[in-house]
Length: 271
Picture 1: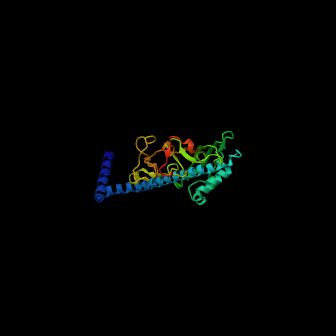
Picture 2: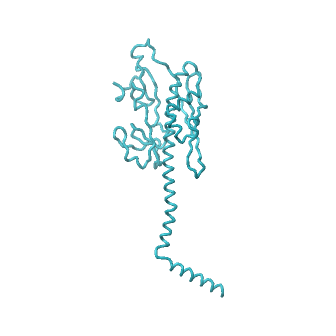
Picture 3: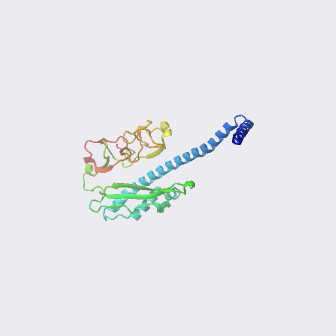
């Protein structure tokens, strides 16, 4: 009997307590709690997106610098087939810019780039370039973690300068892409040197390529919904989910003009 009376008293106390609260205060308290969790989570998501874009931008910058440095190294190894990885590393840093490297989220700055896995085949002159580095994610809540990245590619041996004893047609060097249909007189042609950018997918509809066209999905690497960010080029008409997509790569060969039979001249760089 005493237990029943105690429960009745508790019930009355709760009702009196609830009736003492102003109307809508309980609801407003719930909204305040949700906002206190929602706003930090939203800001954290925005911060993650910013760092994701910076990470991809840094990776592309390092890869482009490594490819350019490897082309120069190919000339040095033509006479003596020994790859100087220290010189290769120094050249990569110089091409990126020492200030850009030291102020980036690259762990260790200029000293954080390693080329020790790069080798050259003395028989064929081919170089297998391997660049390793770590990128730190400056989020104090996780203790500033870092992630390891590796960039690998192969570059053919240097074929030397044109022979002065060749006739004019044979001495004239042009450049062709592996799957292209035209030849190029300028190695810096925008059709050969792709400018890759990593952009948020949400802003893609407002972007246009160099010719004013919109970007459509790549059938080779975009399946289903796109990721938060995609890759585009200034001269292309497709967006990509994967940086390794063949649509973002150019394998270029330097050949004599007489060997470019069946290919027309590039409308951008050829006379």
